[in-house]
Length: 563
Ligand code: ACM
Image (cartoon, rainbow, N blue to C red; front, side, top):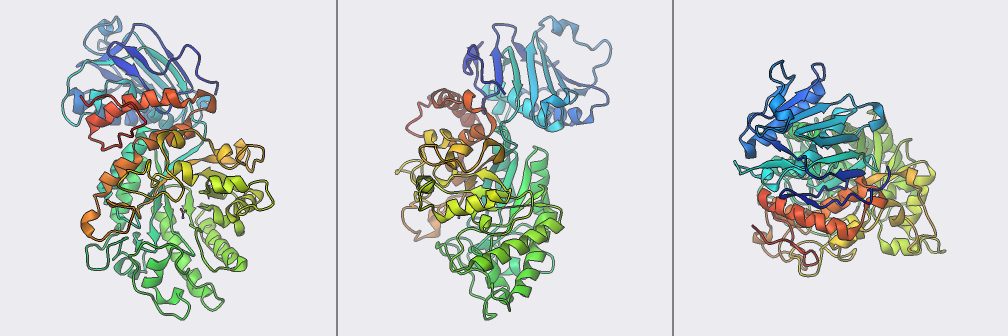
């Protein structure tokens, strides 16, 4: 995609509204005048055989109805109802035309959007592309469109011409529902956030030392014992905290309707105390430890001795199959991070065995970069979570273990998802005043969350030594860990009263940084500039005010007054 044209100022005030699209589209032209306005006679028109366009259109009509109060019909306009008066700029309402017959050059997610004389035309090659285009249209409407109740128009859409497609195919976010459990409604809210910024992969960190959240047939102990804890919450303080199959399906379906794939993670061989507490046979010596609700990392892994391997393999077969079958993505995440006291042979056995189970389910393996040290099946994805310390070692004789694992995985043909901890980790504090989060990877203000890309984040600090090419990058992901989701996170909590609802923590840590990572994943490097992004963020902040999102009014951003 070519860069934004010089004449395309992405924040152009037009008739009381402003064009501030995040992520920045590949091509955007704002034209003077000729705006369109949704009105009581607005219709959404589709081709009679284009069921997918009708489905996307109906969803959009339902969204529009809340704030506008209009019942917008979706379908084929009949003769005599072709809104001639509107075509000439009448006040009763623009026509929205949606089509998935835009030609395959638009790709999976590309679209064009044209607004001219009260006619809005969005074309894509797939329903997904059309949904991305409709998302852009949503951002072109005044902020009151985000209101949860009837609001005042006019519902004006500036005259724009957009053609757009993503830079990377994988644009994800991760929820750590293991350390702090998210009810289905909280997960749905997060999916809404992702969809607004054109993210397409929700990575669910379903298991860790402090909790197991997935229902697994034939393994009821995982949810009876493993789901009895969260970080700071010992057995008996609530719960159990897990998703029934019906609840997990509800999440997957909600995500699918927004073109977000759900990727399950079963972490191992480390970060597995919840499984170990539930299943004695995956422990060396056959003795289960008590459920863990502390805050440490680096606890002992599942047993990898030859005697324990049949039991561990049976466990992996059951849980990875279940994770694969309940989820929608063609990817299963097998974890692999922070495994203490394991030999190369043991790690390789675990990665190979997990990989065989995933492959038998006709899915691909994803894992933290440490799995690069093991034998990977074709099509694997390595999630890089190193930071500037690792980068500083690249090309020296003393490369860190993280860099060596990344190199080993890439040498096997794996592609990379970039989640550099000092850029993309949403659990890092923005600044030292924040009530939540950690800072082991440094503070991550909005500028740091924005000014990077996957190739630079996996290269030496001066950029002279690269480990991956642009083609070897599958995309980006912003993980939201939750082990410090309580007030006063500079020390361990002394009371459960310090824990805030997951939505409060999520809003604060996610906004405004998730939109920044989304733009890193979607927009071309040439189209991106932090100063210009920041101006769009200020405009979006006003939309978040309307939505009731509790974002962090980071002091380095010149937020508008709350109106
Ligand atoms: C990680 O942050 N342990 C992947």
